[in-house]
Image (cartoon, rainbow, N blue to C red; front, side, top):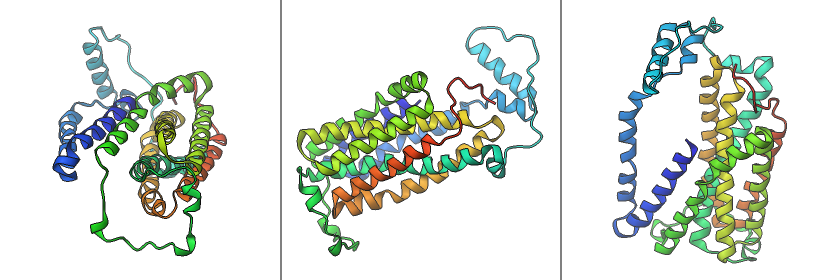
Length: 311
């Protein structure tokens, strides 16, 4: 599923290359909304989880979904009754802070915030880096906090990327395609927590390198790798989270953690697009620091979900 998501991102970048220069960004945005209409139709065909039906006492609905799955796979559903331990109540937000889940929830709060902060930050800062095409050494010398002002520039000064820069942005988006495969391999071989830690540390290292030296072909290669590791962090987070929580609170936890993560996504443009206009070095260092904090959160996660039976 993560690979399909990365294909959508690459397609959006390719459409930007085709449409923005001749027709403007509004036409590109309009075209990119069409897949949402397709999803509205297809979403009515998505079945509910049979396990969810079972733990909430809806055995008939669980059997119906299993029968549909069996028919699709051209096989017979076994005659045995579906049984599992039924939950007395649905999952509540308060359940996430019970003693057995409190530490996990707090660390994943921080992790989701950081993950979306650094992921969307990487996408935005990569675009700014390609547009500016700065050279090695200019990043550090450009820091001048004494003159730092956040007054918006005149709209007439806004300059979008040219065709070559749009092409580079498209090539960079292709870095997300192999990321799900890498995540699956690392997570199955070394475990989820170790993969978390490795990806955060690699993201941090590349951010530091880009902050010090950001220009030329080497920059494009490092930005490509940075984008790949950023998306890999998204993949391992989405893999770990549902495995760590029991069924009756899984959707509640995923929804709440995703909301916390969106706060990070909302704040990151102030670093990637505003602060970077004054100091690319400082912007990259902030992302490196946040990623390092994410690595610490991953290290202290209380559960390794590799090979764990879902509760």
